[in-house]
Image (cartoon, rainbow, N blue to C red; front, top):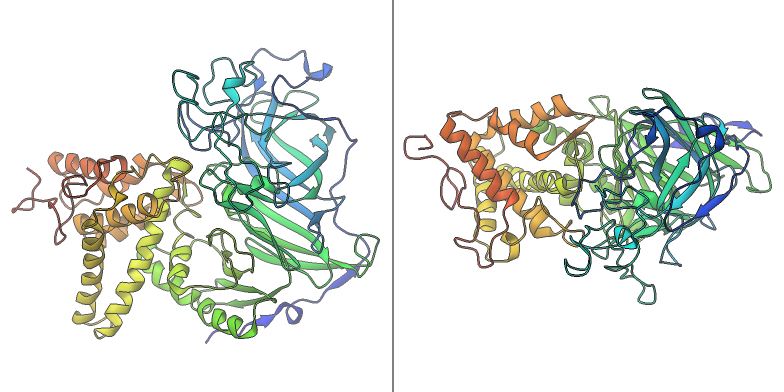
Length: 616
């Protein structure tokens, strides 16, 4: 028997204190919002060892066209302390708001950068933030905002050629006759407000790189602390496909859903999937508001009334001992009704809904939210043990572009939840969250597996109707359901085959066909090739070996090579051909021969094995 949902006011006593958690602010230094050019270096940092240099201002690969502006080199993200002081009524960060980033230098650094979007082309819903100070290990540091440079620019990050700092969906910017350079950043296409200007191909990139120059170089191997104090309005970021993500205004506060890069619209960070620090959240909000974040709720501390919070305030402390990727950081604050219970395996389940959702809809939502424990148990059969100590679902009211698998706190927008999508987002806790993609071009890897979770849900339902999963009829119905799903996808003559999943543009990154359905079908075929038991073993091996980190395409494919029932050279080469056909090849339109010509046993299409089970 599981504990019932209990309001938090019954779980914790709230200690009253007049002291609010605050970041210690150093002396304010000048902010430069500049287009190009070097950041001024303090005199104390001029006499540097010859081996010291600035950290890379991107983690993108040369020639890349998918959010090449994101990520920062020269250091590794270790831990982040977020100290929000948030006026939920007016959607403002107040004095004392800021973050502390604990990083480890991988080179001797004269300067380094972060991703932060202080202002936006969307003057209504975008951010409008001001940095008050930056310190490194407690000492004031110089800082400035600069435009990104395309990855691999031989002239360096301060290339004086304006074309080296331009926007595009693809490479090269403006075509080879006009500009031979790859893009430095991806477009920001606004659809929500027709009067808001987009940032289109060929235009200058926004100055979203916060470059920090410490008072002295940071030696290689040193762990250092960067504190950024900032105030103003958090907001949303617009993607290259016209969607938006980030800090959405909700009734009485916010709803945060940020994939792929929207976290930078409300906090500075190393905004790349391979940067996965652990987190502590200290959210100070007006009394009566609820703060929801990743991990586990550690404490609530009440504070007396002051000029900022006339009715008093409360600091909510959440802690995530598990590392979190850039786009999975959750931070929703408002009129949320939050409950907590412990499941049979010890996992703590949180459930939160915006109080503005009608009571009848809240009841409907709750019935689905309560399925998360059984869904987690079901998905654990395939993936191995659930990787985190807590899990949760949060339902907000804003009409955000999508639901999202925020780590341990899945978000649903628009006031409603869907059972099939809960299977999808919960599957992401293993795929995308615990084992994160190595870059944005690997988004297909985790979205395909999450889509398979929806197929498994459908197959589970078929098995139940046929007599249950423990019966022969139920098991047959389960397998038949997955085969039917593959055959339906493979018969498609749509544009599902015309885009390679591993080579998206910003406009197609979240294409249902390229990123979700085609990889989903590929995994179903792969399951037939290696067999269900070996398929599950590969998934569990990946979780065990790469949990808490990242995976690239070669590592993913190697995991399935290791569980092949026939590991002959011919079968190995055929499996390589399978991955190339399904993940890496763009075909002409029309289907038929213009689609992958390798499937699996029992499926429509050219089989993987010959009549003897070999791969001649």
